[in-house]
Amino acid sequence: MNRDDAEEFTQSLGQIVAGSWRQIALAKRLGVPKALALTTEEWVNKRLGGYVRLSIADRREAIKELTAEGYSNLAIGEVLGVDEGLVRRDKRSENSESTDQNHKENSSAASSASENSDPINAVAALAADEQLHAVVEASRRGIVTGVAMDGHAERGLDCYETPPEAVRALLGIESFTGRIWEPACGPGAIVRELRQAGYSVTASDIEDYSCPDSTAGIDFLLEQRAPNDVETVLTNPPFMHANEFVRHALTLVPRVVMLLRLAFLESEGRSDILDGGELARVYVFRNRLPMMHRHGWQGPPASSAIAMAWFVWERNHRGPTELRRISWGALP
Image (cartoon, rainbow, N blue to C red):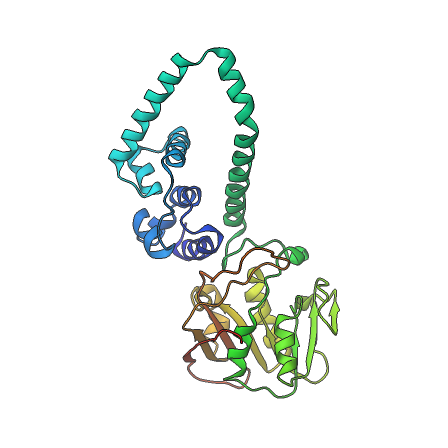
């Protein structure tokens, strides 16, 4: 694994479930900490925000599972954030309790206990397997900013709504002329803020998310020209296709504004759009934005683990890129 891939895996993992031992085990197996020149413990504490502490019972179950997968006591300690000696003690205790239990219970009682507990254990195991599978799939496809991305044709499964606070922060420092095109509008998070600020907006998306006054079924990457009077493309692009969105937008309009992870500044593979002279400004958020939850998310709001920034390209810009720090405030 190279450093860029390791960095993207790390940022994404912070959003999936910071500190979960199964994800830490997977990252260790993939060589993520090593690729970032960190120990497993340093990686968890510095990049994921620390370990999730387990109950004794959960810790022993984790030790049992990791042992079965071939991890040494030292490696198990690194994954769980505990001392190697504690791993050995837990193993001894588990073996002792298992032996005592076998002596005390007859086969009938053991069968009854198994019948009572199997449904719960099966559900828990299934959930754990599905979570691990999701992370493996994310790594296999390539993680870019916190979520596993499906193909472009499946964009309906990949709609992460832009916090309105991010748009308002941008409008406080940038003004626009002409019409604005939002080509990945989703339900309309960016569109609403732009229209409320008095801008004329053309909204479209490859999927129909019921954004008011928008056109569904438009694959931005296949469009050969911008709609009439459009001078700016402004969007939070599908993460997996951010590179393509920027490159394509620059062929259509004189000004491109996109909300991207700050790590977009890295990678030699983007040198043409980062070092070509047209990247005029990058507005980095001092404070992390609210989590960009998937469309239809019903869970509690959360803070993002990813550093984000507004990137502004201008066709007529020549020279160095201006880097500025900005903040967003909570909505009234």
